[in-house]
Amino acid sequence: YICIFSLDESALLGRDTLRVATEQHANTNKSNALSTSIINTANKFRNATQVKVLENHVQNAFQHWSLKLKQNNKYFASSDSTNSSGGNLTNNLNDKQQPVVLRKPRQRIRAEKNWRLFYQKFATDHVRPTLIWNHKTRDELRETIENEIRNFNIDKDLGHGHLISWNHNEFEVLYNCLNDEIKIGSVYLRLLLEQGDLTVNTDAASDAYNASEFFNDLYHRFLLSQPINPKQASMKSMCLQAMTIVYARHYEIIGPFNDTKHIILM
Image (cartoon, rainbow, N blue to C red):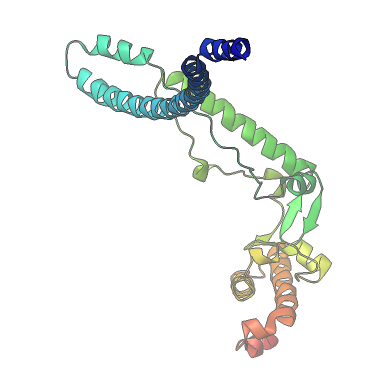
């Protein structure tokens, strides 16, 4: 028994429980420290990314703000430099600062007019009481526009760098090929008598005239035409026939005609 007791006592004496517990605790602390380090590193990366995105937004904002200040300073500097001796140098420095052109948002542009139909009708001949359009009128329009462009370029060259503008309100095309046509108001009298009607269905440009005004213009021309020669007599007859056509179509708009008795007696 003595020998067995001594072996067991030596085994118990050889085991250091405190050291084993300390090592296990140290290993646990290392594992926890490694996990904490990994978590902290991940947080740092996430925070760094957010900060970088925020810095980009702030940088863009300051860039646009700085560009706006430069443009304002350029405007005031250019206005002040014209009254000072160093104006040329300031203008040269400001000209070197080219403005940054920002991309415009995409937008779908829709044509308001049907230009395809316009060009189709433009190339087609039309013969109506309110419109005569053929190859002769197209040629005269082309020649007039070419002459207008040529004169504008000459004035621009003679202007020596001055701003030259074109007043489109004064632009007018005189169709010489239609000089023989008798036109009262906006209606060609010959075509009205040939077609015998002036309605919305047969004339797409019927809104170009007013029935009451056109009837009064016909009657005024009828009174002014004196039958002193065959041409004047023919004009008087044509005006009377045209008055008959217009009044038969638009009698409700024109109203009563008080000079009917006078015309019958004539």
